[in-house]
Length: 606
Image (cartoon, rainbow, N blue to C red):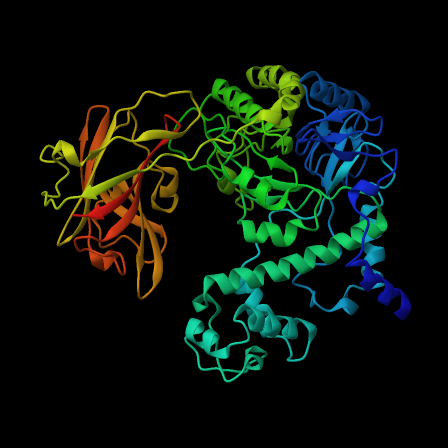
């Protein structure tokens, strides 16, 4: 057994690439700068799929599907222009479609010291072989997703490996990473950590006293997270390639666009970068071309969807309510074609085949709340191509799927000349002193302090809107005002306020004491005060919670006005003196009309 384990250790550093695959399986091809999958017969294709096709079973169905139902599902998928049974689809529908599925390893990064080569044993390899057996030898297998929405955090990684016995592989890895990160300078570490460690070795175990992970610098924690995750996926992927040489590894289905540092750390082990990216505007994010420039690997969006509930302002787990089946169809076309126009994209996998449910509030619902899933997912049940129990087909949506999917390969084939969306413009402005009465009445604001935003994200093309924002400063703080058109003010409750209407302000500045600072406040039209109906401010990231921001608003036909005073006490280090510079971004989210606005400026206090 020992020689085999030693040999296995070598595999973590030298394994065959996807390009070494022989005939009889799906491969990758870059044709003139455009990425494609290529099937066993040599035909290039763009993967268009639906997750959970035939049921969310995770490739473990108890018995084969009835032939008539199987035939209807597969033929419907083909008729609507889909070619892939995406993650968790039932094996009964695999014949006749491409397969892109997740494997479930017999281990977890929390189970053992992933830096210990001996822990990656022959037993784990054989158990993983059993998990992968159902896929082996299938020419229509695109590749493997090896994880789903892993939530790696620097804090958790630090706590876990600091608890390990000093001298263990993981403990040594943590100490060496810290040494490298701080250039072998313990004084630099102590300055950054606000500690008095005598050596890097004191990081191990309980040495050096109590270190609170949440108080350590973000650059260190993020870098250590990347080291841990990168090591885990490198060794995990090596085992997968040992079992199925030449296979495509489709990534770990990240929850939303990750940061570039993380992507560089884990993406080196993948052939494709997979991202679950729900976007109610149907717009390919600006991060994707940045990712491609950084890592040079093609990408897929492996979960996305639109929900069609008719009432705005409801809680939505994914925040994808677009209210009508026509809007769902519009969103499908817009998002798929945006992806197809990008030469580095390889596929789009809709979530999901069949609506969740029935849930509480449905006309077909009966029973109790069970484990609470109906509350957790409600009202995101209308995410399917078909209804609950496959009782109905969303004809408007699938007709657009068929039309759009039929155009994708032609669009993608002409994507070599694609240009990324330009960055939103920003202005350079002087910010005069001005002291308004913060009462929600914006009539006293002079025109020279006004700013006109532009649409930054929208489901519809060029939606009508009429917004004006104002910005000034005085000895009491920054003052901001807005006059917004909004026919329906949406507020789904304080815990879900981020899915409601708000005017947001982001402040970025530099102080000599703390370096770069950034803070974001959102001003909501209701939900605050003792009556729960007053306007208020909240901060969802950065220091401060918004409680010290004074907010006033007035309602008007078709919209509202707002004024807010942001005192220095609400923003640590806020520079309020002539000549100080701030980068300010103002944005508004209109939930029911499905758009967001933006104004940005590099301002100098006058």
